Length: 494
Image (spheres, rainbow, N blue to C red):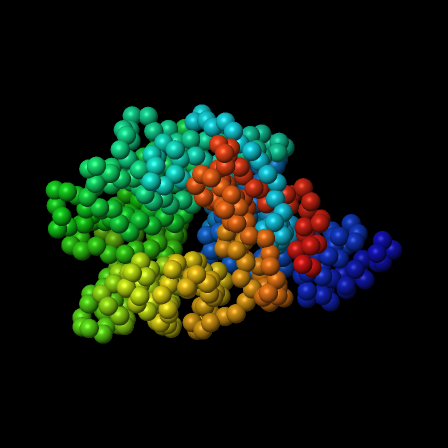
């Protein structure tokens, strides 16, 4: 390879439409690697096509990757946000493509670096935070929440894991327990219950500022429902003891501290659909039982316009008929332009009802938007609606993970690996098709069988759990970084 003319090398590269072959060839000599790496536009398009950024996990991985690369030389400069990452001139898209394939390879093969964290702190850390994973003591005091955070303290220093606790000074939690949490790359939302008084509260905290006291969103409410967190926006609705006939619906921009609220007669179910630079779109679903065989469901797409006299503006609506009894109907975001609605899984399980699943697509411009029903399916009793990725929707039916095509709702039969459901980082379509269905791979969550305290919590790059008083992080990204060539080549062969 060293003696081949440049035009011959270029011919080899241009003749190949197989990115796996290009990656493997790039390791054969420095010249070839430099010329393969230089095809930044091609690698950017392949990355965008194979790893769509509509997925929260994909966005979180790319955000962490970008922060790690940018802070290697300048700890003060990080990406502004996931919406601008694809336009960043500082990303090496060849390296990003190889790294994304390699992290999935490390999850699939059970390759990680183990970190033992023994000392927690509520002190203010300086530097750049790369990621955080909360460990939640459900049915226990909120003071037991512990967060493992990966920080780069100084440029050119290796990132290090730190154990942090929330600062709850001044809040009486003697009879409160954690009942539910939501978390994203930047925020943690905690719902607590005062058990004797049957009062519910909602708090939010920034992972970058765990040394600050959590901010109260709703305190001592009769009920709190339909909490949704996506990027920097939070939705919730609550009921006060002083007025059980109405609900208060709230939308919070956690980045600016702005909030908007309105009073409604009935409760609804919500999901945040899309966040733009100047607005936020969300879906509301209301259902009413009309007769013994059908239930009327009304889906509405709303837009929140900050600093407006009418911040809540309805954009589109769609009325559907769903078969079944009178159960709650829940919306679930698939990506920026699609969402699914389904019967609440607890209603389905308790009453042994068939679960109805419908996919809707948002079409048109804001001034002329319509909601179009793409397909509808009736399923057996569903234990859990897992997630969606690329072209597939995942559900747990009778303790078996099943795959449904987002294109037409048909069943899809592919390899099912627990590591993918843990990290939410799936292989590319062409790589997935080559993985045999009957091969047994390591299950990263199987370690929970030996965990004595709580459960294992996973981010796209790491897993966090507690055992015998020690907090343990399994870091798949750091293992890849230490063996980049082995993992890069292996990711395209195994």
